[in-house]
Figure 1 (cartoon, rainbow, N blue to C red):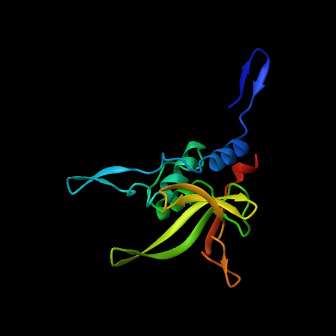
Figure 2: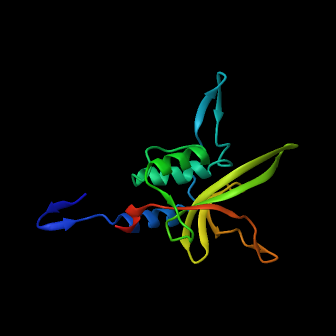
Figure 3: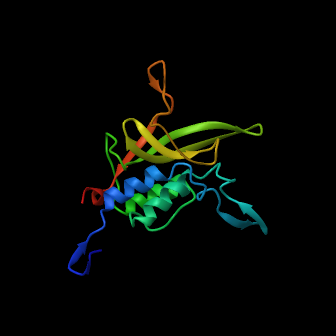
Length: 165
C-alpha cells in the first residue's frame, strides 16, 4: 500500500510493524475471550484467556494478512499458515512463529495435553499467551532450561517470505 500526498510516498514497513505489534502485545487483555453457544448455553471458549495462545497468534497474523482468518486452535492456525505460505525453518528469527510440543495439565483431576504457540522476538525471548495471567507475556523462548535441556521443547518454527520484503 503506497500513498502519494503532497509529493510524499508512504510505504508501510510490514516486518517492522509486525514485530512491533508482537512485542507491544505483552500485557494486552484483548485476546481473552471467544464466546459461542454450545448446546444452547453461552460459553467462553478461551476460558478467560486460559486457552488464548492460538487466538492471540492467529489474530496478529490475520491483521498483517499473513493468514486467511483468526483461529481458536493451534492446529487450525497451523493449517491456515501452511496454506498461506508459511514454511518450517530450523533456527528462529524475530517474528517467526513458534510451536511448542504438547504439555500435560491437570484440569480438575482430568489430564489434558495442549500444544502452544507464540512468536520469537530475538535474544532467546518469545511472546505467547500465559495461562497463569490469561494474556500475552514475554518469556524465555524455551521457558528456560532444566539440567541443560529446554523446559518446553519446540516442535516447529515457521517463517513467511513476505517478512523479508
